Length: 365
Ligand code: G3P
Ligand code: CA
Image (cartoon, rainbow, N blue to C red; front, side, top):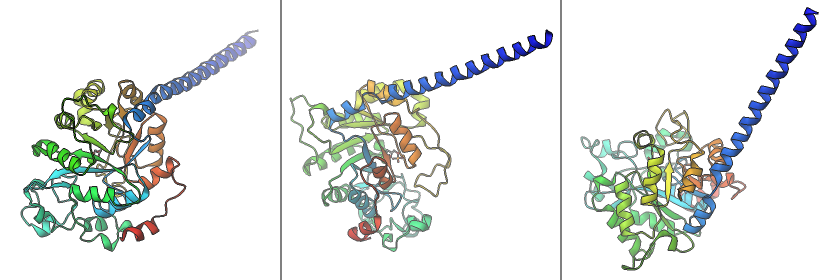
C-alpha cells in the first residue's frame, strides 16, 4: 500500500510540474505576441502623414561599409542602390563652409597627421575649407578594411553640403537627405545656414511667415529630415523650418540621465521622431565602421510602440546585421540607419540581390 501511495505522489508531482511548465511557456508566448503587437502599432499612419517612406532605408554616412564614410563613393553607391535617404553629419570649416564629417577631429578618417603635423588634435572647425581639401579622406579605409579596399579611394576629398546635394540630385534615383547637426553647440548659426542653403537649392519650401506650418502640411514625400543629439539645435531648426520633420537622437548617456519617458516627451516637443541607438552587441570592430568594441541595448525594441503612441517615428541606428534588421522590424521600427543598405534592401524585399560590380563601374570607382 505504501509503495502505491508513493507512485501516486510521484505522478501527481510530475503532472503538476508539466502543467506549470506548459502554463509558463504559453504565458511567455502570449506575452511575446502581446509585446510585439503592442510595439508594432501606429507607425504606418504616422509615416504616411509625414510623407516619410516606411520602412525607411537610411544610408548611414553613405554606404559606409563599402566605401570611406561621407565621401563621394559612399554617397554615390548608396544613391545607386536606391536608398530612401543619405545620412550625413554636418560640421563647419573655420571659414564657414558646411561640410560632411562625423568625428570632432580628423585623425580617424584623414591623413591629418601627415599634412598638418602638430595640429592633428585640432577640431574640424580649426581648419579652412582649402586646408581640408588637401586631406586624403579615403586611404584610411583601405588600411583599416583591406578586404574592401579600392585604389580609387585614395585621395577622395571631404565634401561640402552642396556636394552631397549634387550627388542626391544627380542620378536616376533621388534619395532624400537625413542631416545631423553634429556637435551643433560648437557651430553657432549652423541651423540658419543649413536652412538657407536647402531653401536656395529648392530642397525645402520657403517658410511663409504668418501662415501656420507644421510637418503635417508637408507634401507627399519628406525630402529632408533633420536629426540631432542636441535638443537646442532641433529647437532652432523647428523655429526656422517647422515644415521639415526632425528627429531627436538618443544614446545611452541620455537614456541614463533622462530616461525613456522624458526623452519621448522632449522628442515630441521638438519634432516627429526618435533615433534610438540600436541593438548591437559585441562585435569585431573591424567588421563595421562603428568603433565601440562592446555595444549593447540602450533601448528595448518594444519601446517602439510607446513612441508611436506618443506620435513619434522610430529610426534606430546603426543596424547592420540581418538579425538586428529582423528584430527592429518585428517590433515595429519605421526603418533604420544602416552602413549596409544593400543588405537592408534585400531584407525589405526591395531587391532580390544587389550586384555591386556594375554599380562600381557606373560611378567610376
Ligand atoms: O545619426 C544617426 C547616427 O548616425 C548617430 O550616431 O555617431 O553615427 O552620428 P553617429
Ligand atoms: Ca549621424
